[in-house]
Length: 288
Image (cartoon, rainbow, N blue to C red; front, top):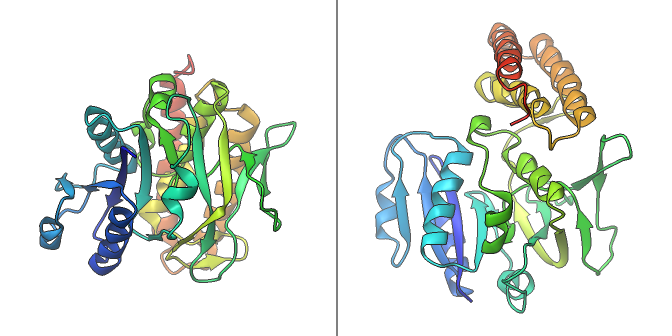
């Protein structure tokens, strides 16, 4: 199979992580854990035949994924899979997403993702004619279908794809890293295919508000607010999409300021995010 799974962790629930690693190995995948925890989790080093790269600090998901990608490419992997610490893979994961797939073509495959807590299908996205994202669901269909934007956890990417698209954008640190990379795939006409026969459970692990969406702490909210400004600087991302995210994230931040106990912290994160976002725009006028 020659496939390597990259699992990025940050102070994980070790039992859940071990279950994920065990499932991956049972299906013939090699595993590399790239850990962003400040404190090394001793149990990692007790996992047999698993490569552990301990960063000993939080380098962000993009940097951690890039470390894993380099390891996988250096190991001559044909397929590279991405996971975070809160996913459960089904028994047909490798059979549906890797086996019998062409490793010589640039392509991305993803499972149908179900929210572990609600049991609801988590959407992928397509853009409408003016670049605004719309949710895409399977609607019970059994056929594979194309999407344009999807979360990274559970995805399978042929190694060939990285020579065309490049690696993850470390400037983003955490939020929108996966969608940014999807936009690069779209620019290069690389298909992103949802395989409905493979159903993966994923835990978001955070509260949701009816208007705010997922309720992040002020620090994480900073990246959620700042990174749409970064996307606005890139020529491969539709301007309408970036502006839409700026509008939505700003409204959500304002609601958090009004509704959450840490109102000042949310206000400070909003101000800092907008300030830093504009600075980035000024320094990246060429869309690089």
